[in-house]
Length: 137
Image (tube, rainbow, N blue to C red; front, side, top):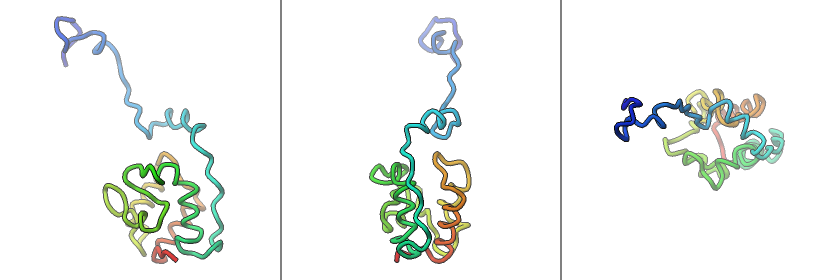
C-alpha cells in the first residue's frame, strides 16, 4: 500500500519489503511443529464401558481426546468435559443436534481438518451417540 520509499512510516521498506505468511492454528506446518507438544490422548473407552450415554464412553472420549483444549480452557467457548457444557455449545451456538449428526457442527468440524481430529472409530461412536439422541445417561 505505502510502497518502500522510506519517506514515511507507511512506506517503510523494513515492513513492506518483507513477505509475511499467516500461520493460523490450522496451518499444516504449525500443526506438525506443535504435534509433539500436545499430550497423547488416552485410548477411547469401549462403547459398552459405563453405558452408551455421555456419562459412559462418550464423556470419557471427549475428556481424554478433547479436554486439553475444550476443558477448562474452553477454546472457542466450547467445553466438552460435562454434558451440560457440551450441550450448551460454543461461542457460535450449539454443536450437537440430538438425533441429527449431519446437522451437528461437532461432526462437521471433526469430519474436516481440525487441529486434532478424532479417529474414524471414535467419530463413528460420537455420530451414533448423536443419532441415538445424544443422551446424558
